[in-house]
Length: 239
Image (cartoon, rainbow, N blue to C red; front, side):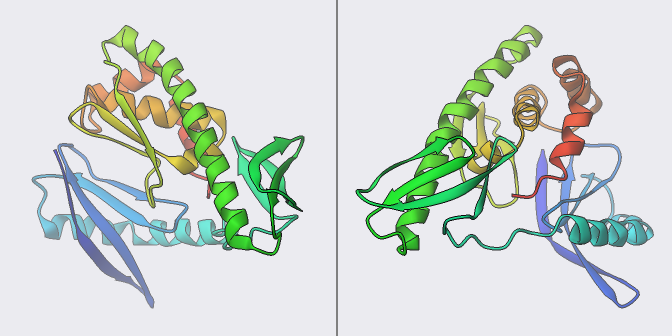
């Protein structure tokens, strides 16, 4: 069982570090600093608040260094303007947006360009709608295909095939419900293929173990022996 609590704050010198506490059925505490510059603390369900806070304070210097490094080397992308020449990402590769004026039609990936046709190329709302529709279509096709591949592997280890949903998620690449439903972030289609496979396999293993226990990681390792390398790459992906 997982319980998400309120945001918490600690002081480290002149800096204030905000973190979100998640209580789980686990033995040890884990701190995750994400590329979005968020801090998540996963603690045993029975741990006392004072014990958790003391542990976070002890790791404050490490948390601050991670946040600084992420902000320096992996800055959050600027909002898209949806104009020609802008960079878009699909399956970990960069493409250039090419906006053409003409009869509106679906966007097409041609070489290293995503070509978009709209009646008025200065109408960035129309450009965005066309680009978003292209990403949604690709996400359902691509994520569905890799889900099938990962299910074929996981099924050998007693994992049932899930119901798949794809939608935009603000802070998570994927989630798994106790009812056998996996939700994937639509933006996952922008990540490299090996990272997509990691997220899917991670969530598939949660169908059998709804926690991050030793049996969960044992199953994940059997299904995907190199998952740690894939996760390390994904941790540095900023969409």
